[in-house]
Image 1 (cartoon, rainbow, N blue to C red):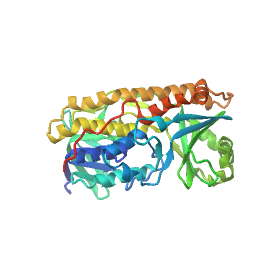
Image 2: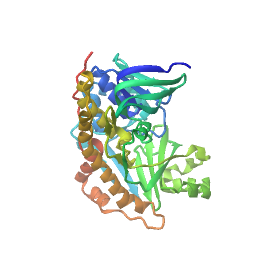
Image 3: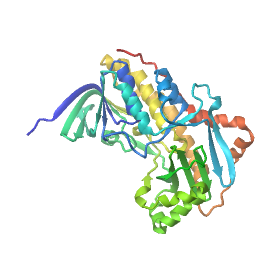
Image 4: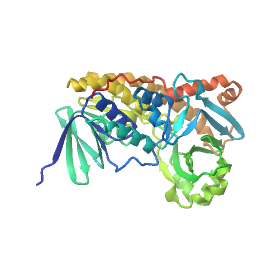
Length: 408
């Protein structure tokens, strides 16, 4: 019987998403040996979010990477607009934020991840292993000491002083940890698709809300990435009505797309994204820490999931880099990461749940006449109020700053 290949490192990170790649970069930059395990062969996934918020670009500035990042192709949004029926309004104005980049950058997440990974690779202690899928945890007593991994060549093990679960809302690490999850529920799912973009289309990404329908359109220059919100569990009913009926739903919600909805000529082009809002009660065990969506799955409302994950990574690196170098990480140390990030996570989720219940549930009720809530009316009348959602969306409740040194 062939002997299982075994690797050893200081920190093993499961998941090559925003939390995992950013944490890997920051720890390697601070002189910690890191292995990041990503189960796919690349970063290309349509379900990955597109929004890079001002707080994330502030982190890139602190790392000396912002100028290079801004050379990548992206769509700039200084304001976010919405339509509720015939009522048009500006939901957030980022131009007054106390940061260097007073806008949201819409960029395919795979481009962002590739950008971070390339810069991480210049540090000799950073190791990114693609097509390496974590399948289980390795324990010695009550301590997690590594992970089991499936590769194209067969099974292997990675032993580490610390395992970090950053493998998203379907986290294998979380599932095998036994950590308890609190599920807050989400009343909607998202149908994810793309429709070609014409030069005469609006420049801005929009939220389009009609009675019984809601469509988010993200400008990716040559096409629109579209998210059509549906009541949870309603996909089969929508399919029973047929594609022409679904195409008409899209056209009525965003009339500028009417001449192109025929491109959605197969249900295979329409993917279901199951929305979750949940949070671990405890993010850690001896030798194990969960961050990002593995610790707290966010609603897509506001597009804040990427940026919360990155803030988790920055906080974790700030608190763990020195103890990892000194081989002195304890469960108390890991608890400091959760303590630091619990309040902004809870506040963001509370706000998302409030918006779901106070607004989206009514929009998605096809038997209910849509009406414009008070707050959008106030935003339209008093522009200064647009700074409030801009602050919450653009910076979050506790923006993190890079405190780790660069050690070469």
